[in-house]
Length: 627
Image (cartoon, rainbow, N blue to C red):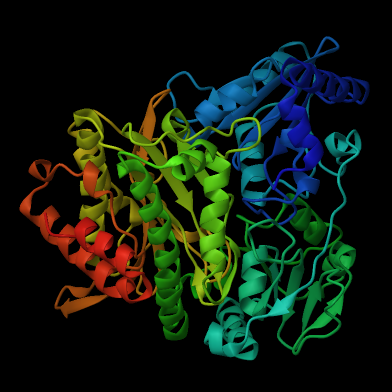
């Protein structure tokens, strides 16, 4: 959640843009005075988190950009500031709007003509070196991962460069909000399916196999999962700010959660004691750290004054957490039934409004007051009616008309759009919830009236891609990149694509985004699919200034059959919300598409109808009838 002061900056238009320029100039002045040629600010915190607390929102403070993925580089140039911001295709439209007037140059990652961060640093270093000067790059070593720092160092290894990583110059210029620690609560074994001690034993077995005497965990969701703890230190992410050092005979948890005085199997110490304790680990022990989530400062601290052996590889907790046990799987199914009831009831009301040809005065009043924010609140109220609901799993994306083309649009008081019914406009709703039984993430695109032929053609293509991925059968351990194309093919044939991954892993009452499983075009050796993983299936298409279409449901990887070639897996749909019947052109679906669609819609109707009113049930039966 963005800090209130940052939200005010965004709302002040030109004056806000001037303020961002002034802040960048102030930082550039400090850098010049200290002889630093560039300062790097990633979107992150001390734990490699995707979503961050207000304390870490430096990019929003300096530029006004509020997306969840970006890197900012500030370069002092003759007493002035040049600034470059890199982000991915999910945020191109949002970044263009939010950076307008600030002077920040937007680099669209993956697009033709984009100069990458390392290329930009090489250009800057080359310019300095050609004048006989060392190029000095600075960043706060606590917020840059080991992997990113190594990539930067390797790209500059043949140049005369220096690194400054032991200070937070950008943060020192901001009267930033405090780093806060909220209460922590324990997830009972009846929900987690495995005790803390059992999980810890499995981790220590992995350490023994790798010859590691110590494991350092810095990723917040890994610590929360391992210790069966949940918190509220980051909005929408039930984690607590913490570090964990695991030895064979003890574990030390570093946190300032005020309601956590003791925990079985762990010694609790203050959050700020972490780096001091890290430096005092027995130098004879091999220390295991994850270069993807651990910060550069962690590596520097371990290497300082010691010749210790450091093992850099993915944390063993990543796969343990990603493969849900039987208890987690069963609870996740229950969470999605509850969520399906809430979202389906919400869609039913939208459809009822759209189809009312002669609304009475009371209905007219209700229609005139409906907006993106009010609909987000109404959906939240329906979720709150479900037993075990805790909170939303991310800021709701309720995007009407052109706003739907902004992939991660989030309505606020400034952008909130009035929703018009009965005209055929699209409302894209990407929302989710945390329940005691698990985490949900669902997107449905809803026609508020009868869509036109173009909308139906594109909606059906997105739906076909969603269904074809849902119906996939594959060998255990298949790469997520090999399945990504199934969802894109129907759009490719029409000359369209989307600039985001097709799916991401989802935590169990944890972060709505987790790895290593995903559906993405880019291959990585870690991105493999195994039984028990939960992943989103969310193709889409976005027409700038017109509308967006995205269909997302979560799927559970389950066993299918086995042969001499190995174990084959398939997907079980978890999300229980119908597709938009008015937008489907059945003539554009093949027989297999129709088979999968009809079976899924039938399951939805059978599963959630018992929880609906008679009127809602009748509508759902019509909405899910076979095509």
